[in-house]
Length: 330
Image (cartoon, rainbow, N blue to C red; front, side, top):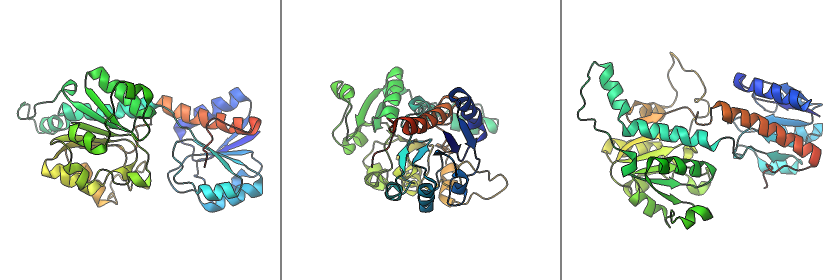
């Protein structure tokens, strides 16, 4: 068996080569993303491993069928950029990495929250001016607060464990309830209930159409004053302009954003000395207590290694056994 891996970053190369050596299989590494042109490099290979935020061209799958390649193994969770109907029509099966490191995502969310609670952005700004005074930037303590977790899958539960460790009251909302959390009485019945009770709202739900802009001017109006909003899930969950308006009005005390609706082409790109081509993103970053990171919650040694290893393992399983526990069913 021979695999070809697209969109390989420098930090992934070592893990891929180690896997190749341990499994005694040929693995070709390609820095270019997978598109209708680069897919031609896959001729003679048995499976394609890829990761990208850009859409997968429909022509990729017709070429895969032509080459007799029946497996596309992606190194991430989401398949929203894959034309799954076209893949299915061409006999291409998809595997993903459903859980590369829930702790990585949850830890970044909590890290940003603690910066806001302890007024780090405010003190950084003051210290840069030589101002060492305390007032009026008094902090808040997490154990006195209620954290509302929207989405209680693997990442949401990792976050819950951390918040409970701080002594915070945690409430959750999910269409699909976890039996253990339900036995603890953690769930509320509606999002409106969560909005009304939570001092901190953290999002861990997929970017489905029913979740589009779930954080907007109307939902913000239902929240407690001085609420903090965290989004390390999908950018389209938050209407950025409404969030900015809520922050400027004083309703929202701050936000932690590792994702942004129009991040493709901006995040993981270098605009040093250039104008960032998105006015709303620039305005978000200009707000002292809105913390923006460029989709790096997953970016840890553990998570990157898991993304590479699990994707390659899944491709191997599909070819050897005709199945993988990580196959995405459509």
